[in-house]
Amino acid sequence: MTVLGSCSLGLRVLFLISAFFLSPTASSTDSAYLADEGVSLGVSLGYGQLANPVYKKDDIPLYALPRIELFAGDFSFANTQFAWTPVWGNNYQVSLFTQLNEDGLYFTKHSAILAAVRTASGRPSMTPPPPGSGVETPVVIKRRGDITKISKRKLSAMSGIEAIVDWQNWRFSAYWSMELTNYHKGLQGALSAQRLFLFDQHLVLLGVELQHLSAGLVDYYYGSALQEMGAGFSPFLGHSSQKYNLKAGYQYQFNQQWQFISDIKYQRLSSGIADSPLINDSNLLSFYAGFAWNF
Amino acid sequence: MMLLSKLLSFLLICSLVYIDSTFAKAGYIEVSPENCVTVEQDCVMDVSINWYTEVSKTVCIRVTDQQIRLFCHKPSQGQNFAITVQNNRNIVLELLSEQLEPLESTEISLFHQHVKKRRRDIAWSIF
Image (cartoon, rainbow over all chains, first blue to last red; front, top):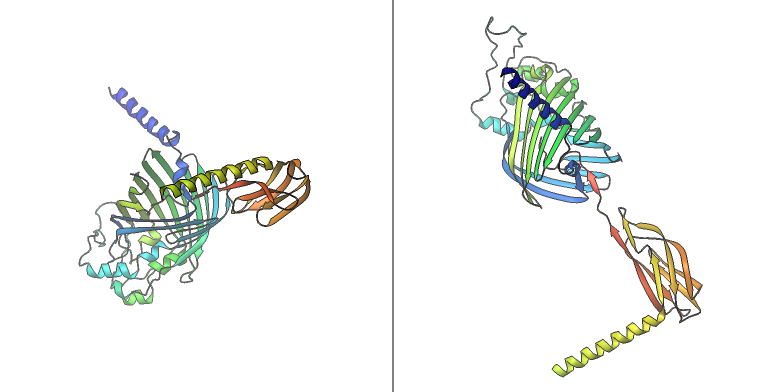
């Protein structure tokens, strides 16, 4: 019984793996990655939040999302991302792009106001565990101060090159970017893989991504220098770091205009960022679900 | 009022029959291919023109694409006259008499194919 049971489980796993890697979908996956020339507008109403890892800063709520896209020749604009694609083929493209840096969003005025309104953080205490409790790991002692008195972190723009390869229902991409706005002169790169499943009107997207942030970028946003120390934070020098992302998305197309959309992302920050006294949480869960109207 | 309406209809039908019979005698002009499908703004292609008329011993062919071009001193019957056309809208070819009176005409219809562009991410991908 046990053997049969384990065989059955093994077979099930095998089927699942083969379905994940090999099965062709009923409809063409490519269509989800393609857009018509011209302008596409849309709006979504729903609920979600972008997890904010910064101490005493609230997660950024998401209630309404716009969709402003323009595809004209080799140029495209999608919300805040601008791209020029001079090299492309049947299953690949190389683009030069400009987009806003995600880390700057955590320090924007909007999230600062939310943090001021919030009276107590629901996040776990950063007090180090007493000696002898649990597994012995190097303890990073963080001293916290007044987050409102740290030096201003500006939202920066990054520009770089991205290569995308589509293979069957997989998409592999890599990008490397440098800062345009000259606040931190940082660099950022990423490798990612996505798998798309399309069944009739259902779309499921699973993805993994590894992001690399240079020391300059990490130090600008998460470093603790004189002003931060004056505000009560322990000193911290940012190192080059990684972010590990797992993503999942589900969409259902009711008709040409209406669709249900949802996205969830789990992000883990490596110690180069997580050890900063400005960081309260190194495991982040962001999500959104809502209904979208495409004009 | 009713009588006037019937009279006008009769005159219209007569004039259409007259026009039709006039052009039927004029001959024909054909172009191949008749359609141009392009992803670019302009359609650029080589075409072949055939024509025939009994009205005139020599004829002119007027091509209206980006500019108006006139090919004259052509025989009353011609085949596989090759030219290159270019335009961002329909292209008109006319068969004219020696006195440049229109005898027949045809059009190359232009269709713009909407190209799908590859996206950096699927629509409504939030994170």
